[in-house]
Amino acid sequence: MKVLVVGSGGREHALCWALAASPLLTKLWCAPGNAGIAEVAECIPLGAEEVAALVGFARGSRVDLVVVGPEAPLTLGLADACAAAGLRCFGPSAAAAMLEGSKTFTKQVADAARAPTAAWERFTDAAAARAYVRAQGAPIVVKADGLAAGKGVVVAESVAEAEAALAEIMESRVHGEAGASVVIEECLLGQEVSFFALCDGDTALPLGAAQDHKRVGDGDTGPNTGGMGAYSPPPVFTQALQDQVMAEIIQPCLAEMARRGTPFRGVLFAGLMLTATGPKLIEFNVRFGDPECQALMVRLKSDLLPALVAACDGKLREVTLAWEALHSLVVVMAANGYPGAYAKGSEIRGLERAAQVPGVQVFHAGTQRREDGTLVATGGRVLGITATGATLQQARAAAYQAVDAVDWPGGFCRRDIAHRALG
Image 1 (cartoon, rainbow, N blue to C red):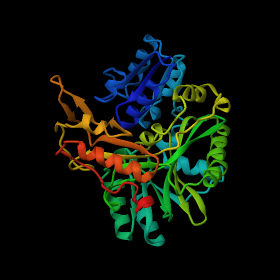
Image 2: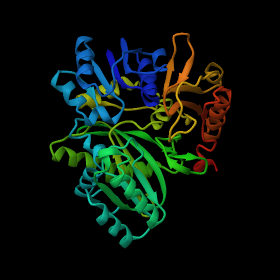
Image 3: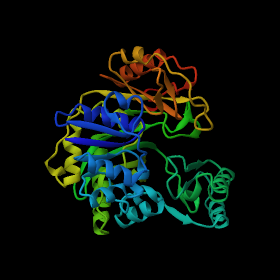
């Protein structure tokens, strides 16, 4: 099969890495890709949001499957354009992608499906939103309604902090039009888990769970990021909890999407809070998480390619997935200054040494290789040093051994990934 992966981050590198191992694969492209992806796929100079050009390339190259990594192309209708062109695409329609494109839409679907979620209200007026925050008190959660690259959520510990978030999101528009409206939620208490399920519009197949680390600093301090590390499987997320989430959240919401005439096909990423009264839905994303995808792919024993095809073709009932009896852990190495302003172009050395650590796989996110062969950083999150081990402790030790082998003064990482599980 000929496959085109769309995207350029660590998630897409992990997907390309997994797909490249499939005996069914005959050709793999990635648009636009990065320096690491170029080692396993042919990178083509098309942006992830160039919908017409991507469809044109896929048609001209007789691509059998388009795999969409990021959310933006999905909300722009890439899956719809592929369908119109007779192309198989792993990813939801633009209408179904509203599960990530609008926090309000997700809440409405969850309420209609009677899926447990936080109490919420939507506001388009900043003054009304401030009045609501003052009436509710803190802690309280403020979310930009639209897409904000994983950074439009503020868990406010005080009313003043919530009001400051409202000013930034709704008045200063730090996230652009995504902040034209906000969703304000009750603050759920517990451990947060990322859970993934492959969906074909009717059937959902569990794809495992991970725990992400959103804050930039050790001890979960500092501003939110796109993710500074992850590990899988989370010890706190038992088989019984997974069964409960499938029965109470995933399947009912999948059925509600079908009832609305917008069946969901692709990977459904449920952000969950494990509260004292059971798991509750925080939000949906309509793509693999980054860096959770890296943690999942290195544990997956089954061939990924036929599973993605089955999701597109409505045949997930015929699929079973096998997993390695391993734990995995990802440490994200980011450019100094991230998630604020950061410098680009700093040289990275030592990845060969890092990759020699047993159990380690280095995934690239924001990298580029210059004509002279020099590897340089081009993004905020730059590398995902991923390791597996018989225990979570072994996976963490291997990951940080590899991190320490990387020679990159222009970058940094958290040193406490998996602290919730290991201390």
